[in-house]
Length: 581
Image (cartoon, rainbow, N blue to C red):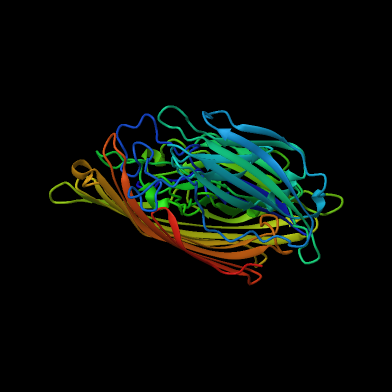
């Protein structure tokens, strides 16, 4: 496939409300590789990735003027985090670290809750990540964990010799139970520094805790968060599930994989990927990851200074596990298995999938506690999707057109009885569609990908919607290397790239400013642009790039945020932002 998938993490949440046990699963954006660096053992140079990091002069128009020594600011468009404006707040520095030769050498820091902001009164918890780097370096992946639970998967921008800097704020209020207890912070950013790769990533990470106010009450949260972490494409972990649970939420939080193309042909075992979740070998949910493109992907000048969609914050997916509480609530240990399905032999994929998860648990309020019971009434879930693939070579055998179509659906209905809520009917229905068309010309030197991922996921408890996730991810991108050999020139054109998603989450999984019954939000973001690079071995490269992005966010309270940004040759030329409370 042509895409570079980012890492996947699974975040599992078990939640119980006042009257009934319900499990939800929140699956994150990614199962992905632990580093964006190309594979050292690949057989030939991929067309979607440079053999070496790009080294361009940092000028207003690349390669056409004097050096500008000021670090360039990179950014990812996103709505500001909604937090109390007039209440008490405490900011704590968590990590300050330089990542040089940092493979298998994460930053590890002991964590203690802030004394001045009581943990039972937090309305919001927000992380601030600021990174600087200068030199020649690839884009890298990073992972942040607290008490063995991954809470953030991100990637870096590609640095320049003049230097870059970026800051991103992430709402992590749903992980408040972890921040309320002493623990250990682990920040992993695998990097290599030598005579060729000189860029060191200097990282500062802080957390701000916002006290509740009358207008901004304390956040509802899970009673317990349990980690599920794997280091393989297919791996499992034993989990002892509380018997008095009402809801279970599991999110594979960050998932991604790097797939590269050699000049000889197509590799990557097809474009389709799905992350599967099983309990004791019973398939309980699947997630189609959003195709995040690294900031060095296709053509690095596309993403300067606007990062590719969600590159700094890999999105999460969500599943409601409540229909499976009759299995989980028996008091025994259960195997939770995460796997990634592709189009290779026996549905295999390539290496570099790293899946993590966390189970959010809300305990039932019945006193004395009673074990949750029930039965699965209907289960319609195929172990693998129907994949239809076709290939059409050109008459002169120098080109190829491929198409892949996948349809997926499942329906589950259970009767669940909890100590405080009695019997309820819980239903989950999911449908998804995947279409991918790829055109290869001139023996693969010219490539185009047109892809659309659509899905809808809906869980109801006695007819009331508890979790809903509907998304559409369009992508249309082309790369052209036909002039690379003669003129040392290659280009990329991003016709469309979108992240359109509507989410309704229960209170135990949503972040700040979440109501009693949860929150809903609609996010739409799109990018389009083009870039070209010309360069010879041993000589300075020149090039140009332009990008346009439109972003909108609307939440359940009616708050609206919109932003329109244009950038050209490394400089933001237009940025219109709406007001935000």
